[in-house]
Image (cartoon, rainbow, N blue to C red; front, side, top):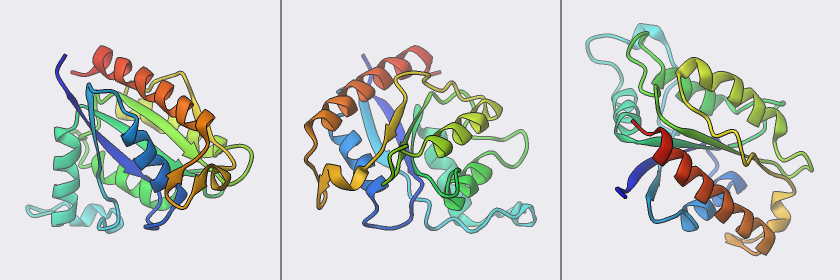
Length: 184
């Protein structure tokens, strides 16, 4: 079984965010058939179609190239105002443009939402699920991943909650199978 390369998009720009900690925890328990790497969003300026010239911003090109090379996409997002953060929406806009040249098409996706609250980013998770069909991304339907009360699951950067670790392993195993089934 060939190793599949997965771009991990972290919807929080904060270096010490719980979302980034969750992403790193998922990377740590990924099955052998997946190689995951975080693709940074922090250097992407706000999408402006006026920038789509013969030479678009270098950050647009680098981001699009990273997504184009990936076999799948793992979205890790906090919830801001019952939706995804602006940086993640902006990255989706950058990758879906210019029209007809989207880099997300046919990339098997999975979503993990994170929140200090009890609902685990349910609104962000489902808002993102509404966007991905337009991008022609087969999105893993189950298991769904809502990490509520995330602050209590970590001691610094160390995941200490064993039931969460077990769930992350189950989730990543399912995603590995999803990628194998849907990767082009």
